[in-house]
Amino acid sequence: MADADADVAGTLAPQRVAIGLLGPQVIAYDLQFTLMGLSIAAIYHYYWRHGHLVKDTLGIKILAGSVIFLNFLYAITCVQATFFITTHQSRDYYGLLSETWPQCLQPLLDGMVGFLVQGWFARRTAKLFKRKLWTWLYLVVIGFVMVVCLGGAIGVTVTSFNLLEKGYYDGLNLMFAATGGLWLWGSAVVDVTNTATLCYLLQSRVQGFNERTDGVLRKLIRLAIETGSYTAFVAVLGAIFSDALDGSSWKQANINYICWISLPSLYTLSLFTTLSSRDRLTTELHAPPAFKNPVNMPSSFLTGNSNPLSRSYNVDVVPVLQHPPSPSHHISIPIQSGAQQDKGKEEGQQVEADRRSEHSDSSRRA
Image 1: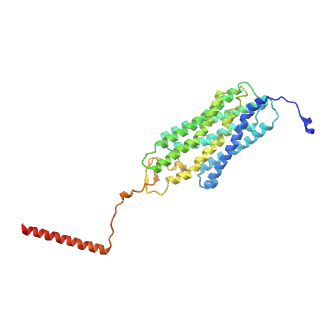
Image 2: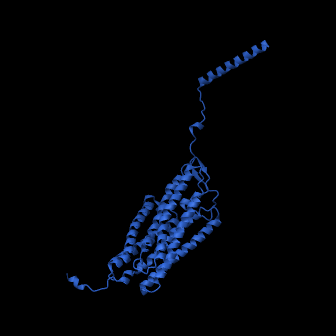
């Protein structure tokens, strides 16, 4: 073939090195594309199947729209990254480590998606505190850790651009490890704290005397664990890789890609899974009640329509159905016809006459 004459000599890294450096990235992007498809299905289910495009509040619309837009930008960078790592011809050791500027933006987009979703979960959890002081303290502490996480993601982005402009230099591995560990450890702390606090506050409201209310609360606890566990697990795993592996060897340089590349889709799934569950749980809570059972949980917890810092938590009630009384508690009231009533009246008069006659006979004998 004529094109064979255009071949040029070049330095190639050993095959095992290529697999060690590019293999984790390929696996990470394949996993990300799979989870991206699941998140798109969750978005479709939420908006087109349940009609929330019109029903949602402005705050939820802004949050969901921002998350979707950031995921769209992130998807573009993932497509570009897979194209680059499979087609570029610089196949020596440092060429396999090289990145493009869209890839350098990935940690920033990743951190922004996590910041938005974690902030919504933190605000949702804060609604359940009975005192405003605890609400403010929780939001301030969690907000501080979230800002630290975002700072770590920005640090990874800056370090990536330094690698792109200056090439590999001494101390680069330490910068990646420090900023990446700060970002991922912080994300794990926020996810675990939000989930654990929410479960504790919900469990404290399980009162044990009404199956409907307790059942909804237990479902909320299970949902909180399900939606918060996988993001926390992946973040913890990535943080461990960032701290334990210094990246000095090709065998460990890119292993943490497997963990953090898929985080935006995981956060998106967590958000829209929780939002979609509101319809079913709200229906169970607000079924036609026989009476209202006072439970110390805001009804806005599911809908997110009110300000958690300005409402009274002691007057909220959740309507529930009381179990119908057992048949043994029913009182039978006999209903008689007119003829039966006349007959009963005559029998009563006869009994009264007999009683008076017996009384007069007793008096005469005395």
